[in-house]
Image (tube, rainbow, N blue to C red; front, side, top):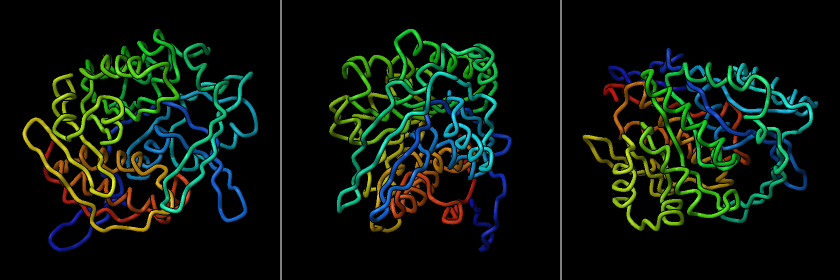
Length: 328
């Protein structure tokens, strides 16, 4: 639950970002996570994780993807509807299944991923009936959320369709948020990834990256280098997630670094960055300052890393106390 501090009290906000209409695009997969000697089957994916947390924080979220027509896909859709997600932009491929991945974590909570997703339905998105109507509907949003992983699922021609969608959203007064979320195995080369991300950079309202991605993909050793690179590329606001050190943010008028409120025991870091993104976007677009939004992101990410898997139970969502004052 998201809350606002007001005259010494904590007042619940049922819908802090309404009428914020969000479209998040990408792939949701079946997720295997280990619990003792047993493995639990859940669902997750970088853009989906952010979409779900945004929905829980009060946004009206449509998830844009493709699934199969199998029992696993049906169960995924049912669980999304139960969470309140709008599934009207989910296309169906009768010949394919959802992707699958397994997580293994070490003693520090750092995770390794193992994927079975090359023939997933989501990769067929732009070849399915109904895609043109879905793109047209998706353009009618206040916020479009994309990631580098989403771009990596498609070829160069299909990636241009995401750029076209982002262009339409911006023309109609909406915003675009983007997380590079660089995974080398998803790209033919780092150069291909850089070119794809930089093609969408001028359309980005809020860029949410990590210090590790910046080092690997662009060779940036300092937060300032990431700020300069993305602002010069056209991004309006740049957030650099720094792990246990919190986050650094630069807007057109302010720069801030926000530490984590407390150091927590990391059980599983899966979904930490995705949940940070959701809390940052929900509070920032709800009127919070960059510092307040980064604080909210740190709080939610801190809760997520203490639970195994990318999605924590709804009952364990933290109360985010954020005074909403400034406009974006």
